Length: 613
Image 1: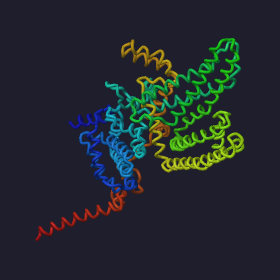
Image 2 (image 1 turned 180 degrees about the vertical axis):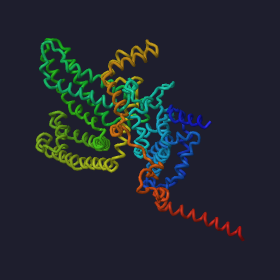
Image 3 (image 1 turned 90 degrees about the vertical axis):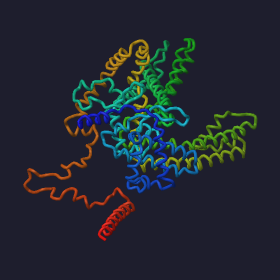
């Protein structure tokens, strides 16, 4: 009987199938408990401190029990409670600090509860997906505790060792995605993970693993960079009477089309499933959008030049030249993408977080700049038109931009916009733009930089978690990475409506095995011979560090069986640590505990005296 129960418990621990109830009642219960815990505002340091007098072990245990038979949903419910408190904080500024304290407490409680979980249940609780009711009344797409923490940028939760462990499992492919009967995603263990057989790891599904997706995309982008460099090296030499496409041009625009389709499909799926679609738009999303716009414009101009009749060669050559000019402008963004090659490094990853935070914080600067700029443009344009002749808005805007960048031309306003009013307005623009607004921007950048650097490690862990989840957030059943997604879109996908399900699966697997044979071979060799190598140093480099040996009697009380010089463990480990202070408690909590123990002893003494009397 005991063996069968142990087997059943092991099965439940290894089964990460999506449980998609609506945990509204549990969320409301946790919210009510936090309001009782924090009826008034307290300092955030009193909540986040490891020896907090608010989030005590007893409080953590109480919240862990609040789910009853649905205890594994408590971390998810607490993260949802945090979202509710933050929404209340933004809707009611008068109680912002109070609701911020409660939201922080909910996140800290979720982290502490997860920290106390046994390792065999950790992955299940972090990856089980739930549905919940959104603010507009609609039912959300399934989301796990890890995914919702990424969406909310929960730094405290995602910087925990437990969250890092699950993220690393997803990154390495120890946990993989499977579609269930409801076409939702389940996270299940990768069965051949510990096998050293090459053929056991030769599986087309491994292309969906974030680590291999990232590596493959880096290689493809380097190839794309080479093709782009060749395309812009001698742009006009390919122009001839026939006006044919250059070979590098064809490859360039085919790969650009593949990237565009991949980004479009990905964004469409994320918008459908993410609770806050705009929160998923990051720095690289904007870079990809700008890159695609430039490439599409260059392609359109190139097609227009080729579509003209032979009698319009001069106009066609001009369009070809404009296409090259637009294509040249995309170079900084293409080279910028090479930063993703090194974002596995903490320094480069943190740098990306800093840049993204600076751009986000600079929103207020650009809003103020746009409002003030419109006013000054209108004023100078009106002064320019006062004499009945205008030189266009371009000259006005150019003068204002030059002044903003530190190269003002004070002679032009006096001559063109009428003395002294044009010069006075131009002085006003220089004062507002270069003295006030630019200093506001510097202050915002400094604040964003200090916020990230002061919390550098945690911010990098959140960045890495976001990167990992982003690669698997909107998965296909069959992952055709660009540029091979064009084959899927135009040659494979149409057969989905013709073939049976089993035949369509077989078609995809065989096609992927052929297309990705080279990377799949490297993956199989890596997983079978390197990642699980018998060489400890090699295996430790590619895998997580060894787990703590806490509680191991061999470590705590080692024996010296073959050593006649003496014994190490003459004093037991328990006796050695018995004099250590309890650093998990604050000084006040320690005094309170000692007083309670003293009170119990006095009660026993009083009862003993009464019984003797």
